[in-house]
Length: 107
Image 1 (cartoon, rainbow, N blue to C red):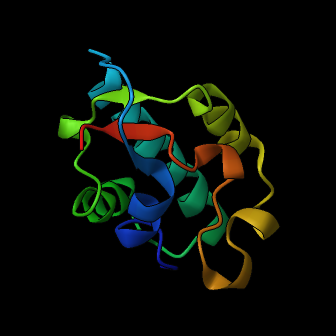
Image 2 (cartoon, rainbow, N blue to C red; image 1 turned 90 degrees about the vertical axis):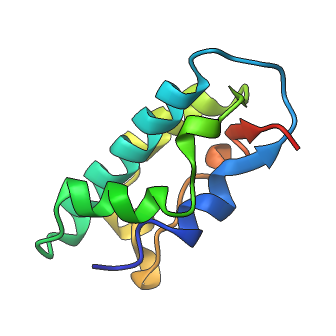
């Protein structure tokens, strides 16, 4: 599969700071699930949801998420509606700009 999880998700979704959010780990999990579901649907290469999520979580420790940014809801929506040609352009996962820094961790 095209590099869906791991470093790619980590670099685009993570930022330090933010106020505490008790549901941040669940929201992080939901975002990883959505990104993987869309990427798998677009790539159609036999990768399973479980494989994608496991790969993503090697670099994105959702259990340690502290909060989500104001752009989180927009990120979730745009991931769902991004065309496959944009989401997986050039054999790379290309998340919407609203996803940058959408998952926050304490420094």
